[in-house]
Amino acid sequence: MASRILSHARAPDPDRPSPFFTTSPRDWTPSLRRRFPRGRSLAAGGVYYYAIQEYKASNELLTEDIYALQSAVERLSKYLGTLEEKMEALERRKK
Image (tube, rainbow, N blue to C red):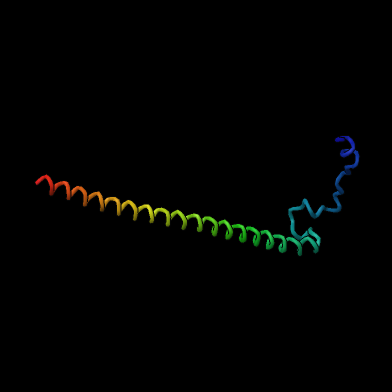
């Protein structure tokens, strides 16, 4: 398999630079110069959309956790209030 791949490989032509492996933008073909900004824009849009969706999901989870914590604090506060009332009633009985 590797021998078939290597047998079809050609030596690079030094007079004709490849637009895919060059480091100079002026060697690129015009169609590649036009396509790269579109690709970057699409990739940036995809990343932005993904980040927004992740932000919304984490925000919803955080909101649910905050509401759960708030209800737990309220229950604990009510429980402590009734416990304090019971302790005061016991102290009054002792006197």
